[in-house]
Amino acid sequence: MVDILHRVGIKSSVAEVYAALTTAEGLAGWWTTNTQGNGNELGGALQFRFGAGGFDMKVLDLDPGRRVLWEVVDGPEEWIGTQVVWDLDQVDDHTIVLFNHHGWKEPVEFMHHCSTKWAVFLMSLKSLIETGKGAPDPHDVKIDNWN
Amino acid sequence: MVDILHRVGIKSSVAEVYAALTTAEGLAGWWTTNTQGNGNELGGALQFRFGAGGFDMKVLDLDPGRRVLWEVVDGPEEWIGTQVVWDLDQVDDHTIVLFNHHGWKEPVEFMHHCSTKWAVFLMSLKSLIETGKGAPDPHDVKIDNWN
Image 1: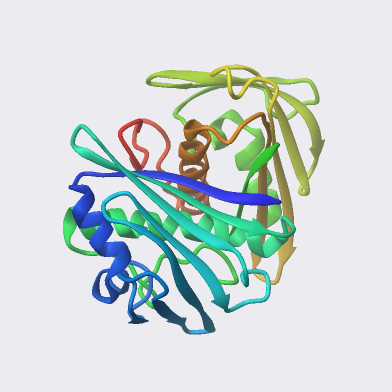
Image 2 (image 1 turned 30 degrees about the horizontal axis):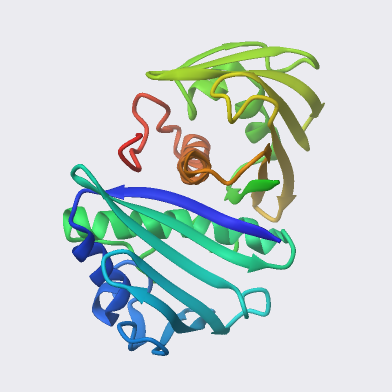
């Protein structure tokens, strides 16, 4: 088992970051403009669509201002059954985001790609909240020949 | 054991990317301007210095145009003894860089930070080669309250 781990600090309240992780409008501002569903209810379903496909998530845990946990229920085979965990903590003037995408069966090349791409989207989340402008798909930063 | 994995694609020849990983001038263009040492010889020593500290690496493997492997011999305690592996491959007009920083004992919060920061520096490497301008320390993209 191998995990994708990241950490960013965002100059904002935890409430603002939590909203960007639990509302379709917030999620559309940094991950993909084509986001639908309900991220603010246990068991809620979220649909994220990109040019080449997408991910369906089920909301497994919510602790307002502290934690969001999704399970991937549809998408690329390597993602199905994996979990994406967001832990938030206020440290001075930053909200610290600890990110963990775990449950990958093998450290395949696609996982390397997703690790870097998650970092780019976490920077998009930071930018959205600090400047009002994120870089969600299709305006996302391209990292390689897979996008 | 947990690894930091990344993948970027750079529109260039593998020779250019290899040079940016094995010469002090290349490394200073994307990681830290304060880079010294010999990265182009087995057993060579490299010193990378940042505002708050730095890393000393020993070159353990070199396969021109294919692989570079460093072992961390001095730096933050969590880094000592870990290995940083760069695997290069030409795919159409891209050089694909598979990055693996392995040997971490625990997935500590600092490892989360380093994972995101490596992604930012890999994008700096890509930018250096594709545009002529990287973002090495102290001009690097800040990700959190630790830098």
